[in-house]
Image (cartoon, rainbow, N blue to C red):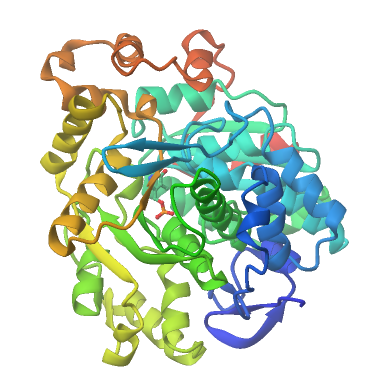
Length: 495
Ligand SMILES: *Cc1c(COP(=O)(O)O)cnc(C)c1O
């Protein structure tokens, strides 16, 4: 069956998958959603023998129906290759009564690699299918993680260039090193004398600049975005939930059809929405446990039915979840509003104008497969220490939020179903917070000393992504003021 994509703010909009991927966001500001979530009509006895790429094809071919088999397989083969440090791509590790689904074995050791390693190929294929002749220029502002994952994904992909702006004094030393050492002739990284919001504003301005778009087009370029609301980032994330279930079944940890719970450390609501899509495809998932840090907008939303971003923004040790507007939640709102795009649009306008909205009791009833809770900073640190001391397994701060929330859930409900916890970053990415949680003596250690200590303590080798930046050449040294961002883009593109 052909699947088309509607806008959450206008159901009359109907485009093919490749068009939705190229556009990213609908013209009305809505997000693209599949007209219906396709059924996973492949038997678990078949899925259990498949490798990651095969499961990826089984799942994505149901959503991206305008891609040919060759096109989609080419995208999948180009993404899930030796950039990952394990052939399993997304291994399951049992510790402390749950299965940690390690989504951090890609190029930048965080879960964004799962989607950003395939997005460039989905984008270039979509461009070809839609007769776009221009090269795609990805323009991004980053507060750390997304920028590097996008750089790694797009590096040396033919027909693309990528430009990343980051706040010169606003990212961690490891994050900065990861970006400024990025290889690939089509990559360009610029530090700005300003904060993340200013970088973001500068990028948005360029996206909306008609004159600049014309100059780009004359030189056979066009801008695109690697933003997490792109359907080309969401669908690849459905794959690993199916893969994890098939893995549990293959290893006789669950019976066929047995329901499992899934716990996801959540920020922009993309990862957990992918799990919800997997459930809607028919994967036997019972509860979707949504874990927040101290920025607990989602916990309050699930509890009260009111989404309210008017509150203090907190900087935590799980920075990728420090978010007050979870953009992907709009897709869930659309579904629980029975695909009523006018209703969805009204709620999103309220969010823009008043910073909040409330859903109806009817809509709230449809959220019964979700459970929300949060972990504060000390609970998160204690969880890292506890699991390390009990099982020797060392997790990162984001995963620890999920793990701590899972503990609260089981205490509250006594539900002891087999549970998968999405492990979204390697502890090597957040070494200082992780090591300090285990013992405060590490406070005085240097960044790479901590890396070596963590390797010893956890009995795991240092990931390639970290080894590489230890001695890598600095390739990107450009720093500019915020009013010079456009000049830097033009210089890089020679326009
Ligand atoms: C982006 C990110 C998250 C949040 O994922 P969403 O899809 O935005 O909810 C959690 N953990 C890490 C390490 C991340 O990079």
